[in-house]
Length: 599
Image (cartoon, rainbow, N blue to C red; front, side, top):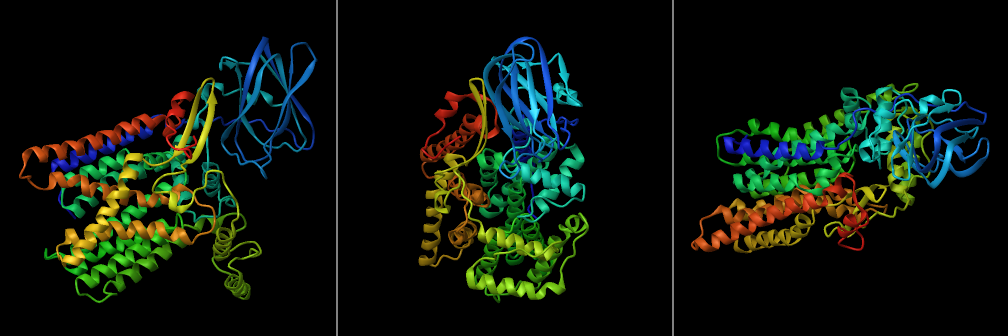
């Protein structure tokens, strides 16, 4: 392991602390409404909210504690028992995903001194809290609430801070992941099964430690993202043999938009990125310890490769796309072995041990599933003919038309997952083709809520200066690699270093060319560290050697500093649309630099 001096530690601590401050600010509330109102099943039920005078009502917000159906008609009255229909609502789970989330009903500035919610017989969802807002977006508190148990609709108003933003509840795919995390804690059948469980289990750990709240289910994602800052510092310092390079890479990651946004989103992406970066860092440490003449034995270095494989196993237990990283790891190992005149499978024993350990990790993450409901076996030997039939069908048609009969074993669930991803035909307005990701033509809009002239919105995108400058940076590194090959240069800086950046970048990206299902820009997330390393390579060069012309050296270093300052300035300019912090709609519109930038 590399030695760190006080300057290294100070830089890492400062950037990590800064990132934590930026991400923890407005991260999420510490408590959610816990008491809930559930209409009596199989009968129509009226709930009446009375105010002390006629009010101009603009909006209703409802917080849903569960994923069940809530259906009602909303009436208003200015005179006793003279009700008029204002709107209706139905969040049928078959058409509308909701869980620990707020829903907004716009009434349209209607005058009323009382509201009546007429719940339909099929309405059985738990409503944690109801907020009534005036035309001035101020909270209106009922003076009386009528209906059996209906007082629970307004008994925790103090827990709700206006305005309602992402900090107040789940949004985007959190509604799948957080719900399933809670089900794992309760050993219930998991709702979200289309990805392996580890990401949801980590979210469950956050809930266990910090409570069932937005802060609780997001905080470990922030910790994971913060851990990547020292990781990329070490990786860049090792790769370029420069503390300045380490600082530049860590600085760029600190102010990278997508890294920031996924840190605050309770899904699996941030953990997949952490394990991917850890895998490549450990691989780099292994190759240095093995191949550089420092007196370290291969046996002493081997634990780095084993740790790299463990990181792969953890990533694979979050999402299967970790396989692309494993492919890059194998290619880099083969290149390194050929380059040092070793057998191609020189590292085979360690790889095998790592794969077996990764398999054990993967199976272990399914223990909560095996204990859920009535229990699930690991494998059903009696269903082997059925599995062979699925294999034959897939080889013939490229898809699996049916799922194994329940209760599903862990192996059955893998088949169902594969069938889901192989056969998905859904569309999405913010999906984007793989080739568009580096130029960021279509970011992913995650959240939006209009707030009386302002807006709270969140978009998943990269820092434009980092992403767009990475394109020529990567092309330049490719040219360096080709030139080194032509000139037969043997030093690592010109032969192997470019491959450490280019091969993972390409192998983490190009496999999506073969995938026909809808894709999103977050599938490009694992490439972000390699974008940063490519940019870092060129930015650190002015500091890497003395210049014959002092003026030229100062000019180039000044340009690098200006680049880094601009990266940070762009982060703060875009901060509101990355974090959900309320901002004027006109300001948000000025940030839409390209036609596909919708947020």
